[in-house]
Amino acid sequence: MAMYEKQLFERFNDLNVLIVGDVMIDRYLIGQVDRISPEAPVPIVLQQSMDNRLGGAANVALNVSALGAKPFLCSIVGTDDNADVFLGLFPENRLPIRGIIKSDSRKTTVKTRVMAGSQQLLRVDQEDNFDLTPFEEEQLTGSIEQILEEEQIHVIIFQDYNKGVLTPGVIEKVIALAGKHSIPTAVDPKFRNFWAYRGVTLFKPNLREIRNQCSFEVKTTLDSLIHTAEYIKQQLENSISLITLSEQGLFIADEKSGLIVPTYVRDIADVCGAGDSVISIAALGLALDLDIAVIANLSNLAGGQVCERNGVVPIDKQQLFDELIQTHNNS
Image 1 (tube, one colour):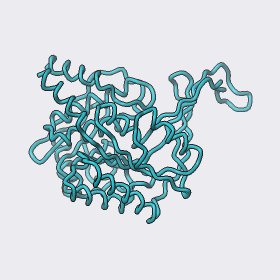
Image 2: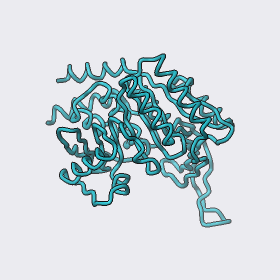
Image 3: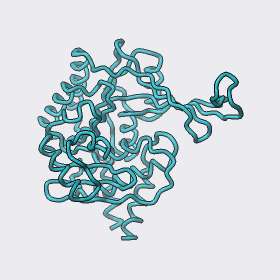
Image 4: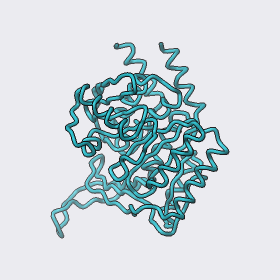
């Protein structure tokens, strides 16, 4: 069994992944608190360092790269100083820049977290969340089409943070291009265009998101979740539904069966970025046509792993391999 897992993880290295969605900088202002402000009952943070990280769909690209596959990231940023900071992170993370388009009509998204040690005190967001203009849509889908013509892409990931990049027009066009090239697609949706991904292969909402979209009660029982997956399929004609259940693990279903994979005991430090990790490993599993039980187990381990570390961080491939072997040895 260990040999099978080793061969599986080696196959990740042969995959090319196109990622489309909202990108951002995850910025951390790190300091210490020794006193309360005399101006208001708030802590004074003495800043000691600042850390800029690639976030949103860019974090998905980091996860894909960490697993050994080659990511092609397509999105739109501003022409501001933060865009330069964002693009400046690409070389050190060995990411190609060709799919990133600059626009002077929108600002680059930045999520700034003020930290006292490992404790988050405050988050400040800078963003535009209106839809792309028709011209920007054309630029983005044109860039995607060019990459699909020039590269052998094995799976496409939509990573939606409702910042305006994944408009209904972009979604429809890219899914059509995926169909033309026989490429499977995986979606991590958000509320604004939740049901716009008709024809997607794998659809991955979390429990809160799908509850907000259904007129019936969604329970964390297998029967209820299978019913929910059937409802999703009626809306989207998708092949696989994967619903993350927070501390209860995750649920996955295809046309034949459905199952719940319970979570493993973890020391949770920070849940940021867990969804990015889950969609990344699930998409690679989809590209390799893995059984849904294998996709579920890998996704569950990956999502839990990143929750053990502070901040938005990618998957550790070796740790994921070791934990997969351990779960099989214990089963």
